[in-house]
Length: 145
Image (cartoon, rainbow, N blue to C red; front, side, top):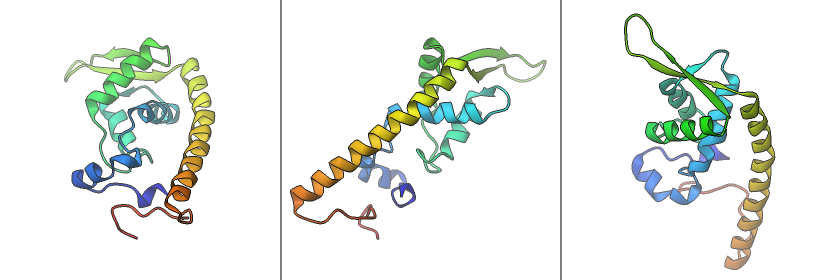
């Protein structure tokens, strides 16, 4: 379903803000998924790249500053740890890893997302009822079928 709603341009994103593509709260589960899949610590730029490929961002690069802010909050909450990788040549990079608490947090997100989904479906039905129309089975975004 999300593929029908992925904004392709910045103009589409502005017109489709109501689709939830800019929900900053969804950055956290997205980052947790990226780190849970990683076999070794990842630097922030790689997390941004992997997040862009996630269903939440649909190929559109998320704001790197927002991802770094979320990583900082997640580190403060104990969901991730970080350490500096200081190679002999090149710039130092902060490397992030998922903690056991982060894995537990991702597990809690699985349930929270299911609850969000149920609530959104109720709201969709209420909106269709308010308009006196049947609930559309497929989304129509930006006036495109």
